Image (cartoon, rainbow, N blue to C red):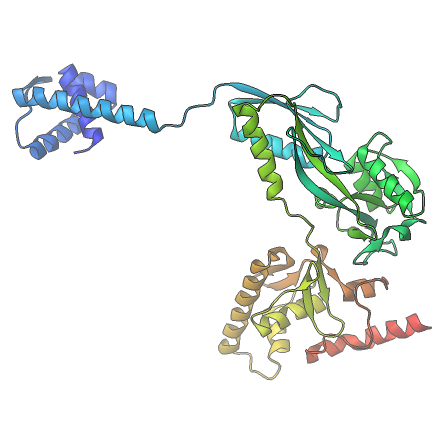
Length: 432
């Protein structure tokens, strides 16, 4: 016996006509009869007498009808009690005075999640009356009507062709001779940058002004200049032709702040939006992932300056081989020829190769580097666009990369010797 069966019986006992109930419940008469037969068998007493389409309840059936109605009403009351109350149609407004490129997708997600709330958004318009505003400040803001979302360090963004490309960090005074792409004069970020440049002993040479992050990206891709921007909220906006370099001595920051009207508490709708925004920033990665591959000397892979651990030595060697081939596809046969030089090419060695592939994929996944290697049926190759490699930068003529060639290349792997003549020749040309 279940609620569904009780509901059918209640309808039949009320209507006393099988065809009527059949139409209302969208069930066949046969299906209804089967449910009622099972119910009578379970109760152990006749509940009704059927006369064609008509149903006549017995005394037991009348009593059971009252009981089933009580049960159904109790279930309805229970469901109403535990059902979360629906939000009444409400309205909330926010002014995005900073970071709109990052926050617009967040606002779209809020609208999708809370469809009963009407969200009004104002972009880059100061003094617009809104429930909330998100803005940039040069120093922390305290009080009962604001919340710090993010303390965000500035970084230098340069094109690959800039001599500073490849630096792990840069001192602000080193930028005195650079040409700057700068925000407009009214933008708070402009004021923060100019103030810190003056304190570092120079006034930035400004070649163009814009508040469009897309224009920033296009000008940097064309190597039109350099710029100083907050590093966390802009970490996905610049392409692989650019590098984001931390600024030290001094490090300086912008404070991303959520503000609301003081003097009264937030209503339930406003609290929902506030929690939604603060939770987003609590889970925002606080620095861009910097992947550096070292081939000069011993082979290692670094994420934000920390070497990753390879639990499988052959998996590490396989990745080194893929790096050595500079984005070219490496077949199973080619990999086996290097990783197991003196082993016969048979089913046993193929199984070992496949185990190494699985191990490498696991290690990459553990370190969130799944995009670093592309695996195909024909073989595998590295995605050169997502990491910095001393070999690649050296071959491209960039001598300011993290590591410099001093005669050693992939010293743990004998197959790496094939590239040494070229690297030595480039080194000799550089000395001349």
